[in-house]
Length: 133
Picture 1 (tube, rainbow, N blue to C red):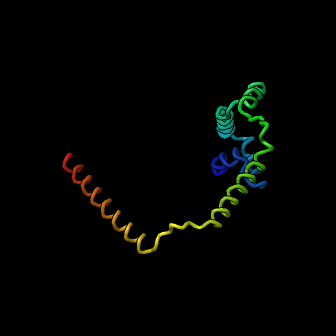
Picture 2 (picture 1 turned 60 degrees about the vertical axis):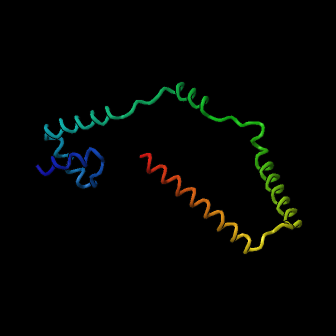
């Protein structure tokens, strides 16, 4: 019975050489193991997905494979030119400082004033929502 328990390992090709040889001797004399091994192999074959015909595969790839466009080789050059343009604009913008820059206290006052209005508006919206539901 010990050998019969090794049938799944044998079918999966996971037995060491010595154990495999011993199991094959047992297999030659055990009709139950032979029948079970045949069943395992038929099951394995039935679970294998059938291969698609070569013509179908070729047609599928021809429809899904992207073809190189005219601009494919130009993409790196266009991207580099765009980056150069953005960099140049940033340099030029840095040469002309904004004369209407805010003082830090003005910015804080503006933010505080607008945040209070936003909070009140949100609070009112929340009250209306709670009343409705």
